[in-house]
Image (tube, rainbow, N blue to C red; front, top):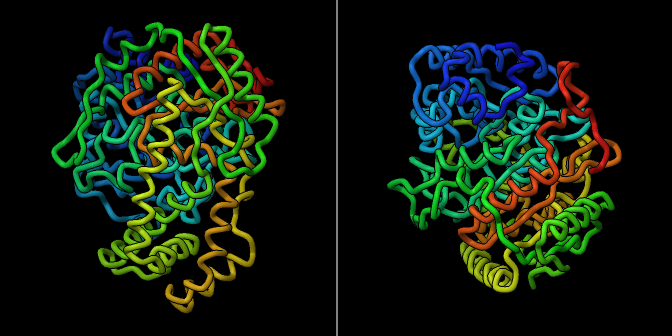
Length: 508
């Protein structure tokens, strides 16, 4: 299979070709590897090739709905036995995983052929992908800009045509943010929909979930069908969908009640392009017959963000301390930012953590009240166009504090608690809209309906009530038909000239 032929198909389409005998899985893999070798030197999206493992797998008979389709795994939580899962961390770079993660096992059972691990910020802790250990991943629409994070390597690879779909996970927006930055479809499943085992039940009390980024909606549905459902360690199994998600694609969504807002939950500025993305989506929804009006949940965005950070600090402290105990590494195995977050977690009391977790119910109740009146909430996925590489680096004073932290130990950071939180909140002003769905455990998606005047994608986010994945897929498919996007090609990476594609399109 030639690379130009490979680029014409999504995952479902490639699976059909392989199933019908029109092309072999090994030939499709060769095309994917060739595409990776062509664009990865620029994008730095794939940080650990798995070509030998993939070629051995592609040479065997494969079964499943996506048999033979090349795939990439995010290098966080998506363990592949015998291959290190670095989590973007120097201390874990060469530590092989002892077994497959359950979600990876299910992707393998579906017939996918993973051939690499993708770039991410250390422990997925940022909305950009710029780890010290691997260097920054770059956006194929403009390599000077971020592909978002934390699933930025996956998103950059999909947007550049290395694979039609790649694995991702989302603890604060890490599926939706890179999807929004790279012109892709990204759905964050609700709490309990996709397993996280076998080594853990629900990280971050269910705020973190597994999923994927894709070019097409039907690929997103097929991938969720492949992995959805509980496992033995799932603490809170939820009811299965009425029918497979793939059958929702193309099914009429009905007349939906949709409330939209372009105001930041943090009361911080929102770029005019993000406002335009939401207003344009709202107008399209009205054209499609939906009831659309300005409305937003009665949420305290600042309080919600601080409660999320409390969880994040505690999680980082537990993670760093656990890795140190298991590997024997010191502070040098981690980035200064990570050590600072971990120190913040140690500075909290158990009572602080429990009080923050208890307030989650308040935020969930507020969103539930909103969904009693509206089927969906529409917001920008991000507060402005994808930022330039390095734009969200910590300021010099914080870097100096981090260096002091590394030299003197974590306990002395306690006095800087307020300053660190303010800086964290400042960085979150670029991505203030995604935390709500994580903290409340509701499904949400980013849909690529807008490109800026400079040719950068900027997605629109839809948040559903608990169990609303099916509704999201129905609406996403309707929007994809009304305003197609999968034919768009980023102009910063080479694509065959004879393809009918748009390069760096203007806002649509």
